[in-house]
Image (cartoon, rainbow over all chains, first blue to last red; front, side, top):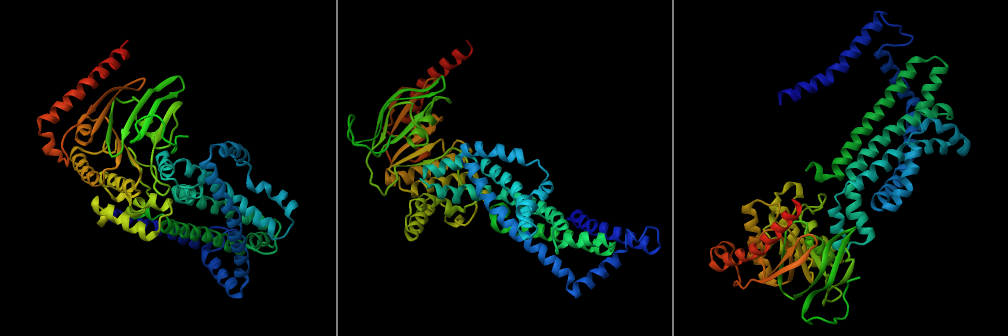
Length: 252
Length: 268
């Protein structure tokens, strides 16, 4: 009990101490504030940008692309993953394609996507979708394949139809790994949305950071980095929360 | 496959009929020309050394496996009753369903109305002493309770034939005895045709009407033993009677020959 409490305290204290050291170093000009502006300056600038509505404009644009992209990439990934897990022939057909394309750094696909889908919203959404697709499809297929065969036998023995095998066995059985895939996919999406917005966008957090670099507005750059980190953190918490809701048998 | 067909040869009241059933796994002959009839309402037990193909046989009856050659048939039944339901060896409950939903699985897959499902499942949960656990998940239950759910699931589905694959083998001695007793009580109330696999001679004599002893590699019928012990049976009282001891001794005799033969073959 005591050790858990002290671990929590250490967990909160260590980043705070680091921020404090950073702040002091900036105040006493031990570090170059052109590259490392004081945390208080960054937070102050963030509030300015927030109240002017500028930050929300970028943030909402990025969030929208993330949400749509996660859906566009995630839903087919779950469907294909389950089908791959259930049917060996489909696994044999699709797995080589996924294994061959998975190692391609997703960011290197950006020029191609810009070429195909243009500079508009579509190319950014596609980038997010690609980022989400791979971890989700791979984890979902693995999730179905690790379901004990005896449970599939039960389904067959009790005459579950194909659809029922899907909904009562494959999907719930794979769910723990599906959630892991979603978590990894969301992380990958966040990386890609920032990159995609740097190149061909007029708004979004990626654009905000890139634009700040072009005009040497380092504080705004830090605001962008901080907000992206915050999105990642909140996304993780949200997925953990959803996981507890949809997988009650793991946490009950 | 081996679905309901018009009865041909064999006794007409045989619920389950096997004719020259063989099963080949690659070059290994798992089952060698098994022919037998199991009458309706019979508690039929198969005993044999491990690897004698008894699970393969049960899986074929369950429609989860097909014979390489020969004929296998479960007769009778109408369209709205399932042909069989299996109680599997080991953990076969869905971890994501609570006790009630697990027990209701067969009925729901058959599209039985929710009202009827609740009625039937509640009845079997009561009979298996699970009423207070109906909302718990399998990981919150002991091994014995999980196997009770599995039994309730099979009985609630009201099949023509119940197939049980060493359902108690993973349980400790006390739990095993308690569950055997419960199974006897439930079964003696509705007398379904049961095919029960076990490697325990005691279990076979305690539960069965008729015991088939199998040989190993390839699986063949070694002996058929009728168990004429009176019902209803009480496990402990039954085991105290001389007739029980006599049967156990007799079946061990058949099995020992097999075990010795297998051992002799293995040591060249």
